[in-house]
Length: 313
Length: 293
Image (cartoon, rainbow over all chains, first blue to last red; front, side):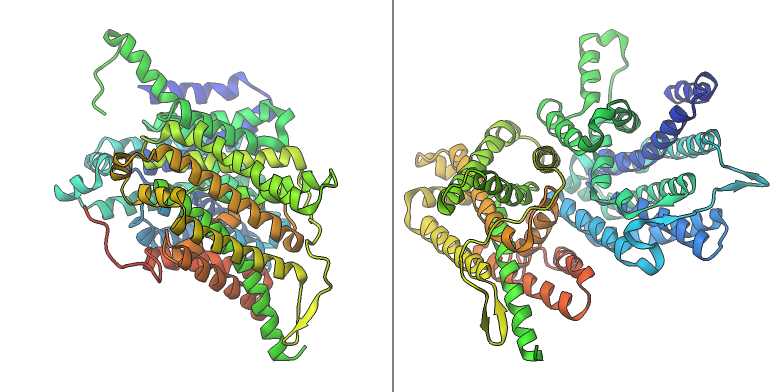
């Protein structure tokens, strides 16, 4: 049901709001939400932290940019190649990383994210270095060139809905239950015969693919990508989206992505100080609502139990 | 410069920067031993040490006074961090603690940007001695300060943990909190103390290295990662390991900057970190026992 309300809102938004600026903010919100949904699957359902998803976003964006600018590859094909590369990298890095937990996993993914950033900065022959890669072509659909904010708005949110329904399906399936059991107690679920390593790596790769597609769409929408777009603060910002959305379900991640995309646009006085805000939000959330904004809703449900269905999670 | 002098030069540079990684790693170890937390804001203590020193140097205080004041200021910050943020969350899961130390790390670098802007600052050198030649390599006087201070910190810490009652109490808490409580030690106070100590050591590292490498608001996370690489390479919790591993990473870094490419020098420590985490998270000196269920 919520997905239909959301779909109605998303469909109505461009009809109600004609401003290209707001549409463009919503394109970024959609791109962020795509990554946040994947991260939420990983964080909320599998209980694994990743501070390096900006790297997968970057690989997708740069694969799209480099292939279409320097090798004249069709942008859609470039997007697919980006996804394939990300699957390989995510598997290679996820396999050993996911044996770690807690701080070790955080540090390993942070280190990986930073390595990727150094690579984007220094492989000047491929990436054009710190100044960024320009002239990335827009996507085309049949004979139509997607070059307005509305085109990308529709495309990005269409892809988002595919990812969202896929994710919701996963959480309600056998895999979802297995993941939640890993989150609650990995050792107990292992002892019940759940192949925890397999599920963890599958979700890790899937969330990396979401980030890669989001990165490709970002590159083709902006027609530009630079290493500073995918620096380590970006990875952290993505995680903060999931965290402030409340680490209880996927919807929270959507809200978190929307809030953290729109907030800096509204509070333009803070332009440069956005890291101060993210840091502050993260610390305050952890102190006062370690379960996220979602916890407040649970609290309300407890106050008015008759209005809500029984929760099983 | 002859090839052998060049090797000596890279070696000296490596040891100098390695001292800083060792100090960051020791900071990690102190908090890790007391709480089991890896403090992701450790790098910000280093950055803030240098920045507060900059602040105090505006008042034309004698060097040693400014040094002590900055150490104390960051130490107090460590205490506030522990009391205000870590202590209320001590019963939360690891994920919350990872996020909150990460949040503090971003918050502190954001605050530093708010106060000092995005510029890089260089602190004045601490010893008024001209660079002199050593094995054909030129030895910067500040390198001597870095090495001297690192050695003193390590020596004082060893004395502290081995010979003083407070040090023994912290050690007791890290071995068995319940037993420590039974003999009248307050684990909470010891955790507080370990944060102060760790912050102060971080600040010292920042103050001694800033005359060489300069310092800016966003240097913390990289120092944190490299220091963590040293801590893991040396075996988390081991101070001797941290120093050895810090030197190793510093030397790797300066040799790869010299012989391969300076643009990838930051990558070296990160690769060491990933290899160690994937292959032997307990470190080269650590025991190989596995975590028990």
